[in-house]
Length: 212
Ligand SMILES: Cc1cc2nc3c(=O)[nH]c(=O)nc-3n(C[C@H](O)[C@H](O)[C@H](O)COP(=O)(O)O)c2cc1C
Image (cartoon, rainbow, N blue to C red; front, side, top):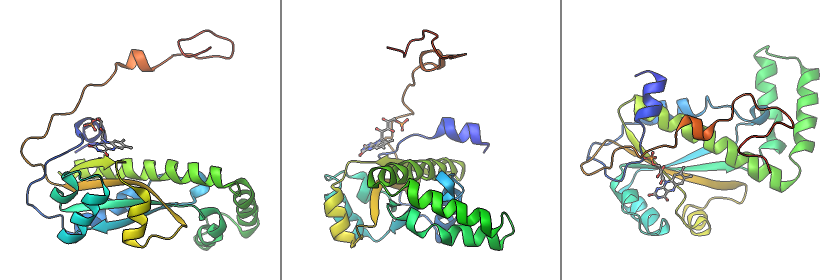
């Protein structure tokens, strides 16, 4: 399936068949997710794959009893690393090793990232941004592979961290239910038109629908 078709076909599923998600498919999904861009290539995003039924039942309770969390054979907890900036030399080391840029430039990047993301609010925003981009990659890839997904922010983050022992270094970004299409799902919902969303040829000082 080509990318545009996958983007247009993706919808949020509530119902899943009994077909399990294989480990190869899970690997392919995370491989797709990790291709997403992140600021300075900090790669904030991590995943917990919740597959066991009892674990999904616990997660369902944490997700305000949303039934799809138990119905989906796989639920991914998407986490964002709030300390990615402090561990950034691990990334530059790999890039230097691969010959992409030299150590001098690496040192410059490491300094810029350490300073730029010292403010926890910035680190928080970046973790959400990166996690969201990775999640979208994953959902698009899942559609292309014939699966259905559902992004979810309806959960109690404190209870989630407690139940799964997630350290304060990691921010729960969202859950993604993953599986194969079951009966009773709505088709994809409508979208606003392109013309409603887009201002063409925007310029400083030029009046458009979004300026004050
Ligand atoms: C960040 C985010 C959080 C969401 N959280 C939930 C949720 O907790 N429960 C739910 O049923 N749907 C959730 N959704 C799904 C949206 O309702 C859905 O994407 C939207 O209605 C558009 O429908 P579509 O995805 O089928 O096109 C969430 C979507 C996003 C992007």
